[in-house]
Image 1 (cartoon, rainbow, N blue to C red):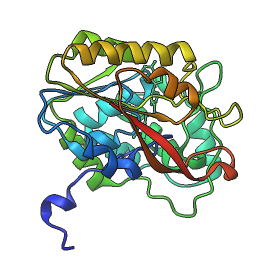
Image 2: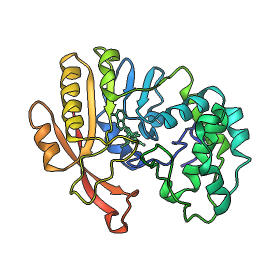
Image 3: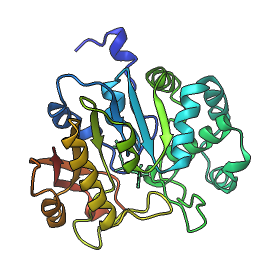
Length: 273
Ligand SMILES: C[S@@+](CC[C@H](N)C(=O)[O-])C[C@H]1O[C@@H](n2cnc3c(N)ncnc32)[C@H](O)[C@@H]1O
């Protein structure tokens, strides 16, 4: 298929993110409403669904402040972010020097560039912090990673203009979403088994109580006339949580970011509405 000008400028997530939804997009988008008011994504992560939809009105949230500050810098000062990112290079010793920096002491553009650099060159594009909230992912095994994809960063920045971006817990969506709006929730998944657990996206864990609160928030939104779509694993606990008043749609996904190689491959996940 011939690429048109518009296709060429279509943004893709500017960060790799655990649980990224790019490969599930086609199935996921089948279940979106035909029309909606404002789009809300309370667990935005890499934002694959947002960048594909490119809605005019949207509120993007995540509890990861470093991630949200990075989005805000890409939205508001993409030239400075690109300038700072171009100064970085792929080298193990240099990676650890940048990793050592305290992000709180950097200006917003330099800080966002650091986040993008570590994401593109660190192990598997993981985001992981220690108990003191310091990024602790080791150097990755890439040969020649693209550190600064300038045209994609500009396309992302264009898509983010006039979009509200907030560091906020997911339940605050209840303060904002109105009848006719569309909310897509992509939370940290309930682990299929104890050993496949990977929920340390931020300093806090996403517990079963959080999963129950999320279900209750989804019920409240649906009762308000908001279109709700969620994704989660096919763990029995998820089926149980959403057994009443929700439709469960099994979809097949390839898990790419996983700490154990044997955890890669096709598995069944759930879309819930
Ligand atoms: C599965 S990822 C989202 C992936 C995203 N859909 C993508 O395509 O990249 C889950 C996100 O939820 C965020 N998160 C974890 N706990 C949260 C909470 N209580 N409130 C809001 N966001 C939270 C994490 O920081 C992470 O970015």
